[in-house]
Amino acid sequence: MSAVPGSAADDATTRDRLTLTGLRADAFHGVFEHERVNGQPFVIDVVVHLSLAEAGGSDRLEQTIHYGELAEAVVGAVERDPVDLIETVAERIASLVLEQPRAEVVEVTVHKPSAPITVPFDDVSVTIIRSRSTIRSRSTEGGE
Image 1 (cartoon, one colour):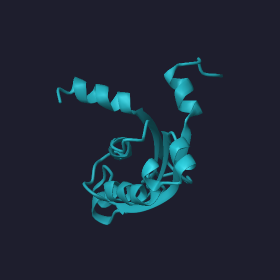
Image 2 (cartoon, rainbow, N blue to C red):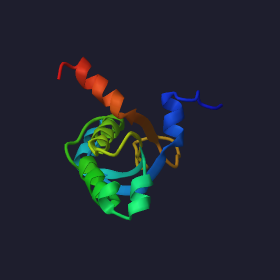
Image 3 (cartoon, helix red, strand yellow):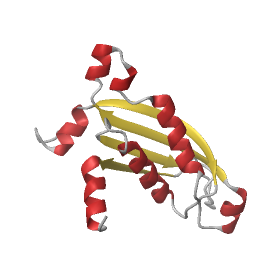
């Protein structure tokens, strides 16, 4: 299925991307007490849609997003303030990434490979896609 030219979906599919795959963090998220006490590993994938043309043409770091600093910030966001749901962790990361002035759209996947599931499994994850406009409209609706 192709996106409608000029639509938000078309814009998102034609942007350049910066991708961080497999960031690892130990944290205490979950609804069960043992998750809050013992913690567990989380794995994060982040895809940032932005223009890389200026950075590619100038070879200047300030024309892009510093992926090392972004990786550290994402892991820090995962490791702080335990919450019940990995959906909440994903929203936290998306908001953090969209604070970067060059970030236009972000896709965040939070993996919980040690989730308390009673059947054999390889992974459980949630993936969200947020844009600067989605975050803005939510803060407007919230009265901020």
